[in-house]
Length: 65
Length: 231
Image 1: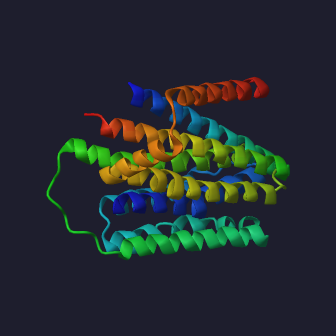
Image 2: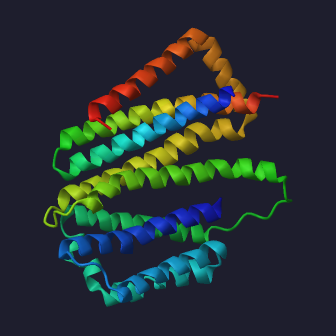
Image 3: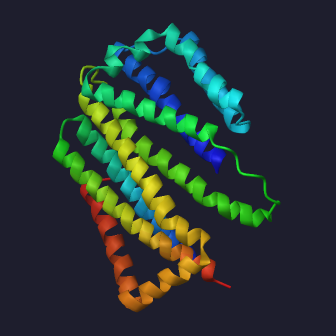
């Protein structure tokens, strides 16, 4: 159950990161380079958070008896 | 694993050589590709499936590359100046060359000897990480490319190409470093899991309260983003 909740949080963070990348592409296409770059950085930071939560989920799931 | 890498590289090569140029040219000309063009563009897809199912040299080094020729010869605008002009065009050409070289390298690599069959549960568990990597790559690349394809401003090429290049760079970072690198060692190595957990417990000393606070903050931030962007 704990592992499932952690995976859920990780997937939600990954979805938020993908949405941030989608928004950044729109800004880059409109020549708003600073906004696009900031959104890419936000997306990468959110993705890093999701990966850390998923690492915890992997350890919790694979250590369970 | 080799087949998964071949499949991924083949899909990227097809997208760079045929799919993306065809989408761009159609958008610029404000005209959808005809049925003949779509039929010729489907040939590499069939060759890709054959090469992945049976990665013999005749399929990977002859059938798949040659299957691109009919559509590229019939529609020379797919390799013309509108697609490959300027610095961005040169970068796109470099990406095609790099992915093509990677495809040939994987195709020429000797396959590992077959091992004894392991239980299905273990094989599924091993397949989850490469499958997750592929899904992550596709989602990130689609997130960057979708607004570019939906944009109907035919004359503005450079920003769209920049967005696609940014998507390729981010997708490579996500797939290569984050999913495979950060998750792979914990996924497959029990000793690494124990070492990481010891490191987290000994050096970071998190408490259940800190974990709960982090999750609440993450949920509040997500709600704030949804409120700001009005989804």
